[in-house]
Amino acid sequence: MSAAWLDKPTLRNINLTAKAGSLVTVVGPVGAGKSSLLMAILGELLPFAGSVTVEGPVGYASQEAWVMSDTIQNNITFGSKWDPEWYRQVVTACQFVPDLALFDAGSDTQVWTCSLVLHLPSLCPVSARSLSVRSPPDD
Image (cartoon, rainbow, N blue to C red; front, top):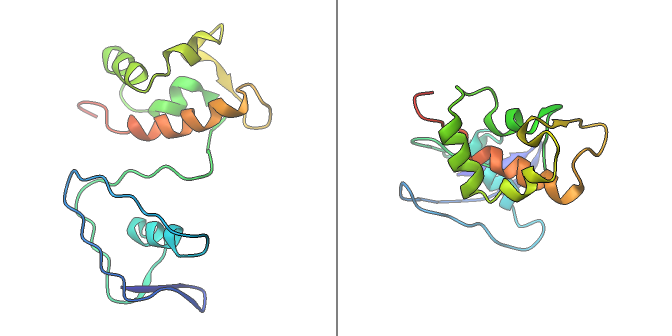
């Protein structure tokens, strides 16, 4: 597969196969095409030669923290069917319980993107933890 942003080729002759359930890391120097490869896998960067085939779900957490103006709970669940036991297991597994204890309203704390209700180190965990809870049971 080969792909380009506008008219600048970014990826050339890439061949990648990953087994289901495997953890794949992409490393390299700045400008090597790591983000472009991920964007191609996600379908955000279309190839001009070859193809990209993805079977099954793909999880992706951007290097930029993204938090919506809503509660911490809603930033984690993104409107999925509410299952309190599952949510408890997830926030425990993600080691978010101590962070939630810092806020009077816990998971119901309102996060505003235009102000710093959460201090900077907490923005990335909320964003990354939202990825880990994307598939609640029976959703």
